[in-house]
Image (cartoon, rainbow, N blue to C red; front, side, top):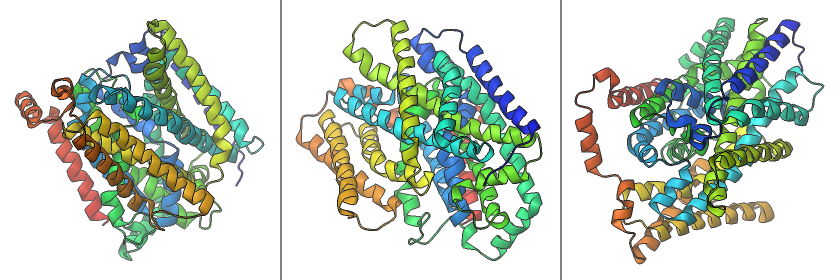
Length: 531
């Protein structure tokens, strides 16, 4: 599949990238030598900016390219990842977010040190750095390059990866998170407008009749709840697998949570999360449905991942085509810009200032910029290896299955049970790492699946329970942590009662609990319609 864009679309595409780089650099002139400004945008962001920025950053390569490809081949069941994750967002905003913001942390691993000790912090920070570089950053570059390869066939995937790396570096590295968030606000809005236009055009080109036909025929393609032997999303996996992966993505992922940490208050952080929740529900209309329609319009594509780019190139009119391609690449580069800032923050705040004491804020920012460059170079070099997997979604899911469960177990048990101590947390993480490495080695060298040939979502709870058991047993047989030191990081009913009192004078339309209930009802309504 190769296409030649007209001069109008190429001009729109080029002008958009010039504008983004200019706007990002312009937004980065102030406060770039302060760690609070560079890494956390001054902790002064309001909920609309946080919500749109989170939305743009969360529409990663696995969403735009991977999930649309999966929807093309198996139907709308892949939307369960988003639907269940929205419920996870509400849970995260309710219980975990206040601890993160009130503790004044720069990184999520830093929270582990405050709750447990530095061993857990260093380990989690290290695996997050590795995952962000080789899983997320490389995946975003690969997806953006794969898309542009269609319209610039003379360029190789590696050459395109280098071009995108330079574009993102141009505005992210000089200005930090403040510049990235402001750029993401524009890109998030552009992505929403562009995807809605594409959905409308797909519906107009016979797509609406095709979806009606599938619904009336009770076709599996239009069902969210699938049998347990389904290759896409078995129903049990929705209950025991997706919530764990979803919490890791929204509650432990430095790339996304760092944007929430920029909130000027807990209330703004919560409302930002709820906004992105509502926007995420819209993905079934703007990404999943068009991909299913793509099955009707373009049957037999050689690679499922290319269905969304195919829809864009075939359906969008001149001018809008260039803008929509820009929106798609913007979504992928937004996640990359978020990653660059998150890994710079992780390395600087979790490692550099720990080993080199009394460093100035200017030096810390400088180190963060160097780390961003190094990560980009490593991500570009890793791009060819991603092409070895069947799809981006499979690559991402395979890696996340091993990384997420032990981390989620530590956070959950640590916040809701004060008896969990620093030794239990550390050895639980180590046990999870051991299980992951053993599983991978058995598969690579002996072609043996330790948990059998079951869906990866059904493997997730086994790793979670394995780590949780280690955490609990080690904690119970060792000395408890000092209750006074950990009191500020344990959730209690008293916290809920205090928040209830604070909300008594708040108008209903400003009450985050009311909007949380509305969002939950909205999710179950979608699930009921497409069950």
